[in-house]
Image (cartoon, rainbow, N blue to C red; front, side, top):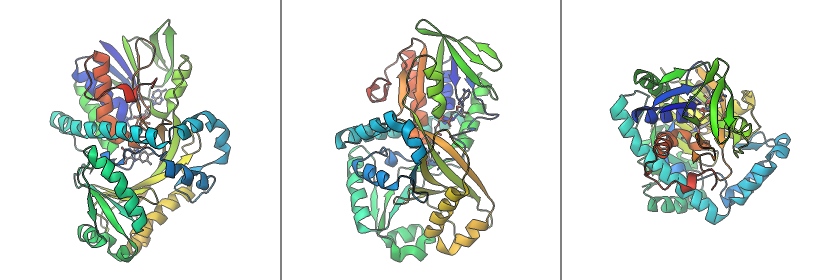
Length: 418
Ligand SMILES: Cc1cc2nc3c(=O)[nH]c(=O)nc-3n(C[C@H](O)[C@H](O)[C@H](O)COP(=O)(O)OP(=O)(O)OC[C@H]3O[C@@H](n4cnc5c(N)ncnc54)[C@H](O)[C@@H]3O)c2cc1C
């Protein structure tokens, strides 16, 4: 069948890949001049099934309210955004009950595990190089109370097949000597051996090349302006370079998806949540961490990617604004400096690339995968803070649903009309 996939981020590209593997004639459309031009360009690099918990846990919601308007907080809700957030925000709060939050965590964790299991399949088929590492990930904690709370969550995750180890501070330092200077301030760590890391941008662009060789038409620098609806079907995809007809259309354009959907009369509850990263060129720098780290309190990750160190974090409800604000970059550098005080000055002066982009976030924190309500339009959107981790699984689920095959996971938790 002829299928158009809109959006060449990590989700759209993996979707195109699985559809091509099924033998379809696929066209992938991306408005950037290269694939992974936006949200998938420089994310935290973590493929972490241990991190599927949506952000609206009952405890976190209380914390968020205290952070409103605070520039130095990991999560910044700009007061100017509040009027636009009413509907989405209420749904976010509605989904923060223990029962709903737990159900969403289960859905995400299952999807993440499935997704990581498929990465081996993609690797065997494509041989992609994307600075991947399978070292596991350590989450560190500053107080025994924070560690104990995280352990309770991790015990629940263990029931879903996510193993973890509790490390004393000594064990953490033995594995990650770079944290030695702050050992006296730490309470310990949780280590997730099955988690991995890799560069989502290298993966997406490499997979895009592989798709091209497999016969996928990859149109970069092409903007989809609108979708032309005829009755219950999409009759044409209208781009700035002309119109395309297809038997099926997949919407995978991340935070922009609601705009194209709205003109068809569909409402997609996806809010852009801005995040930042810095990528430090680690060549010639001593004492950088070798183990991927998460500082849970400050919501920041430090991920070695080949010879680079990627530091990512912060969440900002500021609409579709991707401007890089020096103050938020400084916050990341300060948080990194708190982890590596002896290297702080060297890291701040090292060559680096600053970046900001938007996470496409649903109010329950679970992505939307599957039918749209129109006969030939499919949705693969809303991966939020987990899109790199979810990508292989979301792409494969969508290809299975479109083919009418049984999916490896029950599709209900991810349906648009859930
Ligand atoms: C700071 C930060 C750190 C993160 N860290 C992690 C992490 O460690 N692990 C993890 O799993 N996830 C992480 N994420 C989340 C992850 O990056 C996203 O969920 C993922 O990139 C979303 O992918 P996507 O393909 O849905 O969206 P995108 O990557 O944004 O792709 C959508 C694409 O659609 C294109 N597009 C939009 N509109 C149109 C149009 N009209 N016509 C043509 N093209 C269009 C855009 O140019 C874009 O390239 C992080 C996100 C951020 C911001």
